[in-house]
Amino acid sequence: MMTNPNGIVTQGQFSFLPPLTDVQITAQIKYALDRGWALSVEYTDDPHPRNTYWEMFGAPMFDLKDPAGILMEINNCRKTFPNHYIRVMAFSSVRGVESPTMSYIVNRPKNEPGFGLVRQETQGRNIRYTIHSYATDKPEGERY
Amino acid sequence: MVTPNDKIDIQALLNDSHINEVLDKLDQDLVGLVPVKQRIREIAAYLLITKARLQLGIEAAKPSLHMCFTGNPGTGKTTVALKMADILHRLGYIRQNNVVSVTRDDLVGQYIGHTAPKTKEIIKKAMGGVLFIDEAYYLYKPENERDYGQESIEILLQTMENHRDDLVVILAGYQDRMGTFFKSNPGMSSRITHHVDFPDYDENELLEITKLMADSMHYNLDKPALSAMKDYIEKRKLQPHFANARSIRNALDRARLRQANRLFNDAIKHKKDTTAADLSLITEADIRASRVFEGGLNSEQVTKKS
Image (tube, rainbow over all chains, first blue to last red; front, side):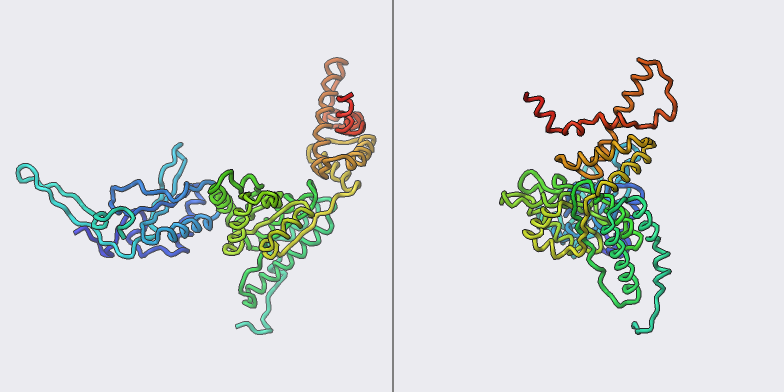
């Protein structure tokens, strides 16, 4: 079974740790801002690990000086999508393109059903494996 | 628990914060403005004492720090706002020594649904520091009931209340217009604790400012030039669109232009040698050539018509 000790989806940084508190999130944002990275808030209700393009909650935030502004946006997103996955991303422009440097989950659904393993029997005795999220059996917006 | 005999060293608190340096610099850099400097000192003292009370646990909540600067253009409101941010930062009331200066255009949108994201964007940028709204009375346009300014004001009010620890808002504008603005937005008025009024400069102060500005640009004005400047100020004050220190800066910029022109002509046409002293000297002629002495903008319009 696709499970882990906490029984939660583990993606990005800090995901094996207990959920980050607002103080800890603020410290992480400050770390990114001090390095001149831009931050953005994104959400989704499809937890598949290959789902890399999450919905943007507003435009990425450039030219901010203080973590409070981004925390405000995170809390707005939590209020709008209390039962979705929400992550914070940081982008560095050092290489001339905005490249993701940080990504961590700051909100997750109360109940995460996890993933099942699907075996597809093909030619001969070959087996193809697929992981399938139980949550995605329901349509978007009704999953959690 | 606090007991009445608990002690706190105000002197140490003052020295740690280094606000005296800011206040002294304020005294040096700004000519005149005595009542403003007095008010800033009072506010600084109040903030320092509140900090001591917070440390001893007598006071639990941080004071409301939103301010309103009223006064005519060019009286130093923006300059003082920058200094104020410095003081607040040194005392630890704001986390970043950062002033985001905006006007109506930056806050209010063009169409329905445009204003809220725009205002929030600015608020996010100013978080942790000072949001300075110049000409704040423009936010409210009573003659247009569908104006989006009201929406922006409501978002501002909400942030001023909910994020008191994160953001200090300073409004600035003409005194009479700000009066009307507050009358029609009582919510705004009640959230602003410190009102600072900026008086106009008198002629001597403006002359003093001229010297300071010329100094900072590494120019000298000789005696006749200074007396010409004095005449200039007297005349300019009576003409429309007088903007105190800003008008002086513009006058100096134009005088520099004329000086450059004069030096150029002397060197090319008359083959005169130019010395370093010449390069930094503004003479009477450079100032007397101003159209302010012929009656300013009005005279020009009259001659065009005739």
